[in-house]
Length: 325
Image (cartoon, rainbow, N blue to C red; front, side):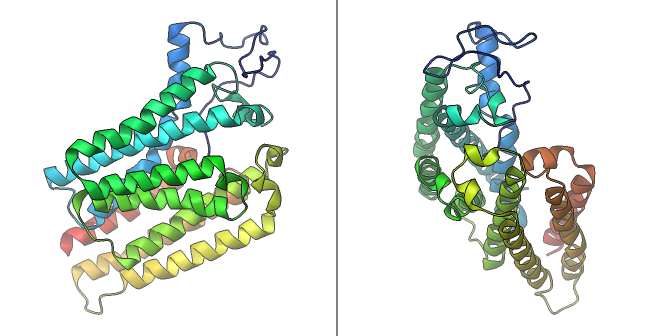
């Protein structure tokens, strides 16, 4: 999984057996994690708040059902978002502790707080464990068992990914894509909205597209295969084929949904018009991946203006169509 750390590499520091640097770093390197303020800043970066963007998927099902205007629905969706932010951040912390030795061999991942020695492995592991336990514990008093079940499934899948699946080619793609899908499923579970087959297929294929593009961008990074066993078992041509297959199937599925209503109603016209920005979003993402900048999907979403404009147009048309329907 990608990180949102932007600190400069610190390859000159000596390291103790637990991964914490013991000697002085290079000139201009940030101070070690001895100060409380520095440690707090490192911990904040380690939980990767930028990647909380993925958890906005919990709003997809209520949004496409036209229910986000209901304060109760919005509150449940927000609660699901917070729970998944805590669960995902806990996973990131434990994953960083486990992968710290390999992360130090990666050009970008070496700047992660644990790998760079800015955050103690014990602090990261302890905080990660607390977050992983706190997320389902906070859901229990609500009595929303469907949401708790999906959250538990997410935790099981992320744990399996960290321990085993991340080193198995193909299964690592499916596991990460599955985590995205469970976020979207949680949105429906939180408010009791059944998910349509169109919704599930588009979300599954979209998740596979993004994850494959991420792996492809990682594979283009020199020496990246040393930091992930499964990555060395892929070829660029294979990942490109999977990415193309996923996007083609997703576009066809979306078009079938948008054109499902044979009657010419305002809602059907708007949904049909949304096909254009949907395809533009997919084409723009393919272009960015081919340029080698798809390793951090959240950075693309935050920084690429054409993608943002196409995405905003898509959301506006879908939302307007749902309102008219």
